[in-house]
Image (cartoon, rainbow, N blue to C red; front, side, top):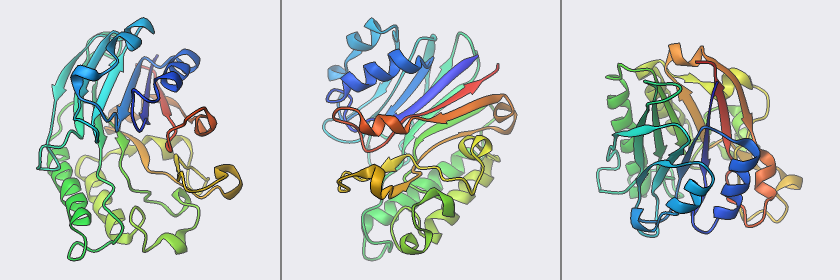
Length: 264
């Protein structure tokens, strides 16, 4: 059994105490982090090693973005794509070398896309769509059992948001973004692991804004974080969970971790 987790941590150094709590309580074999907000030289390697996570692939940059995959299983860095096409650190891929040997785990942080869902008025929205298009071209050429995880910054289904009608013109749930993400899914035939185990229309959120004073009372969540697998790999997933309680931990991220178990 191999357990793989994904979490937009919103600064790994600031939130190392809750990362440590998560690793001790849930004990995933692999943890993919997004928005680490640090360069590689400042990454807390020792803190992870002390917890048993000695194998690390980091693609970071100062103050913004950045991704890292930490593991108890030996791994090697497999890929590093600039789907943003501007040098931002938003992706790192690894190949597992121990249990789960041969599995590719791609860790991605898709741009949020700004506030206005129009590429003419908002350059960031266009960049997001173009990022997804580059991912789609890549996905059509995959020839290995692959898991792609991370903050996709899109909630595609009606039950992935607290109010479908109110969010149709809000970036992350617009029809154009959903269609663009669907093309990415179709390019490789990805299975949405979350929805395999928590079928729609069941409520499934992974993000709640910091602006909400009591996130649980309002529950204005969105499912921005995803774990998608190649068809044959998806058949080996035997469990999936979302740790909503982590949104209440001390100094939390606005995202919560996802965890999938594979019987390999």
